Length: 209
Image (cartoon, rainbow, N blue to C red):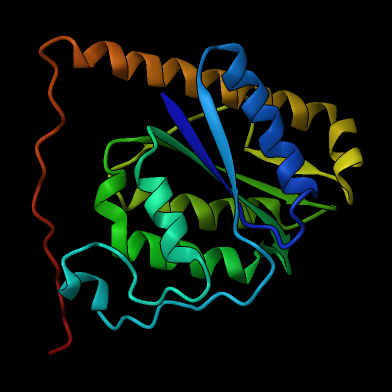
């Protein structure tokens, strides 16, 4: 079992990485492997809805110049996910949103029925709004939202300050614990007769013709 975690912060070893590192420690303590993928600090394309990923039949974004398509390929191999982002102007930073838009649009089916969680970091405010934005990717994609003892957020201006946020640290630890438990629960179900839910075809209602 392996959990892939996306660090969407432009600061590779900053607050988001500190939070994900706590989750990783808890996963390791419970026998679950994890890896943190850094989105980087270069420009990230937004999704332009060109449909190239669908037409190619590869479920892969056709733009490969910013690393997002390669990250998506790595994410496909995981059993669970944690998506982490810093708060910029009371919302997730733009690079993370742009990357997740493309990842879920092009390769969303690879994540169906897998457990996932989102983590946000802020110096002070904007965490709940950002947390809400990121959770919408999970909710629209047949994924299993992993809970914790509070909303998955940490506070601090540096990685060192995040580690002093005792409540935030405990939330990250509980998240790692719950993720490991759910992964093991799903693994045990695979050996029995439990099958995945029926895929209900998506219907679209367009009132404007």
